[in-house]
Image (cartoon, rainbow, N blue to C red; front, side, top):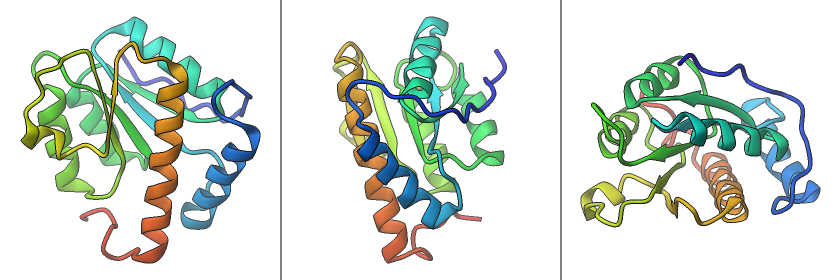
Length: 167
């Protein structure tokens, strides 16, 4: 599955207000000269990717999808993203291994673990900035995503050299 093209048309959705999205956009534009936050969605289930992509695009985010950890890493190496929503249980390269590889490239990008699994080792959980259980609903996912992106922007503004990509 090839990544979906980045969408740039903002829409309004319950759970994320226009005011809060404009704050996300203004914070990001100050640090990255962009108006719309871009999120990389990683899941091996095509219907999950499609539903999340549509949810994020209708909520004002740009969305890029990857159906494996390997594909996510390739996308991440060539594309700046503001956050990642990452499934844990995937074949070949699970979410923990994917997050570990992403952390080698960027210590600060928000990575949200999205999983139905209740058995995630504590060492793996430390790689993620937030956890949203699958099935907890779109409002919780959007609220967590917004919070993590805003937090990352504030940290970059305070100390941009310490939190930059590890190039």
